[in-house]
Length: 223
Image (tube, rainbow, N blue to C red; front, side):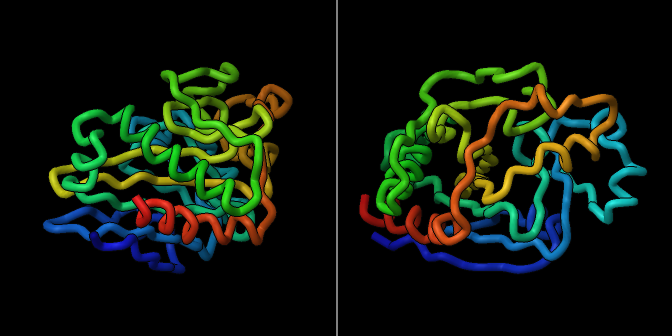
């Protein structure tokens, strides 16, 4: 069975989110490093309702949209590690989760949690149930809620996961913070988002976060 390859990219968030799974896809982990900050909206969010466009312009933050669901994520160079796991449809069916979106999220989350344990991160758990609103900001902010398969560390959300799939396979989009910046995020959103109401978010040391994508690839390759 083909192992998961790790491929690293540096550039623009919009370009990265614009990538599509087309034709026959290989099992891979894509690691993205953004060159400038970007506020990323979920597939169903409307910028005019969510974003303070003037604040984003002043801060030099681009506004982009991803094709997977969920709430906004602030991508800041050096503060977050973003990696996508590309799984061909055949692999999903071999794992018994091919037709079940929630089950496939939990399946990936278990591999991410196992990878974290190999890196010495203890007290991690995979959320098994449906969407939980950790605060009233859950529909707006990705890390203010908890969905199936997402990883919790010490009671706080550590790894956010969303998914986009087509006939070729699934693209699981994962993010983990090395520095959680709730004030910076709130300042870019429309309306008044009290920072104190945003739930705690777990962080990883920079070296551990950087090693996580390859560790996830190794776990997936071993099954």
